[in-house]
Length: 77
Image 1 (cartoon, rainbow, N blue to C red):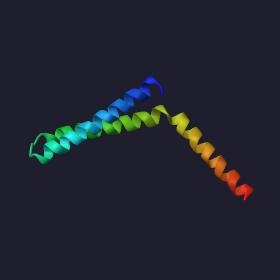
Image 2: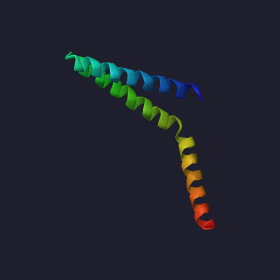
Image 3: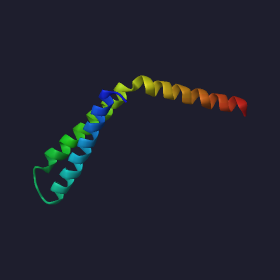
Image 4: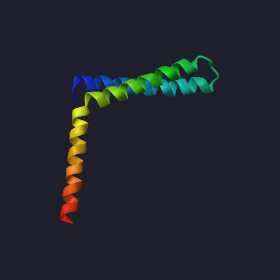
């Protein structure tokens, strides 16, 4: 795992914590909890997009190999 992936995972975890904290604050009736929830959601979206874009070659290779395995299994049966 490279440094970029680690950073995106930290952002993802931080976003999840922000969403959990924001939801508890919202339950308690604080009006400013929407900002915390929105910031957590934005952090989640950025981290997921970053992980996908950063590992796009690996994802394409995985999907290509998965397709090859399926085709080979069909030919053998």
